[in-house]
Amino acid sequence: MSELEDFQDDLDDLASAEDFLNYFEVPYNEPTVHVNRLHILQRFHDYLDEAEMSMPEAMTARRAHYKALLEKAYQDFVASDALTEKVFRVFHMHEAQEVKISVDSLRQQLS
Image (cartoon, rainbow, N blue to C red; front, side, top):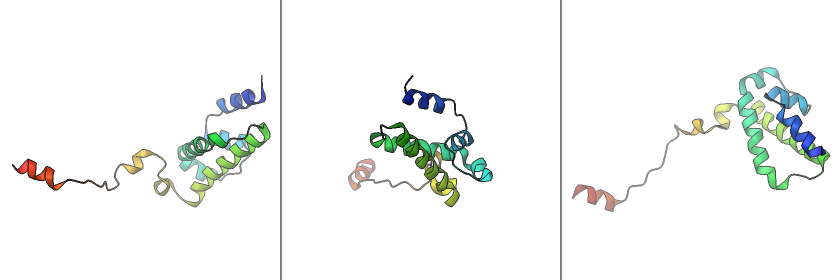
């Protein structure tokens, strides 16, 4: 089995934000993680998606990159909160939406 496959197997075994933080040896505050665990994991996932094309090939560098992205995701919620960060689509559902209606369409409905 290759190093990449071993790494992927390790990641597949991780289930919680705490598991990921412990695996990558990222120090964390338990109350912060308790309140934001799903948001941290989703943000980490989003950061990984963004970095996919620039992910290092070497395993040491790849692990370091994953760790840095996880730390960044965690820090987003140390400095802010879930409502401000709006990681999940549900937080965007009640924002004002811009609607444009043409004058022509109004005229057509009035005739």
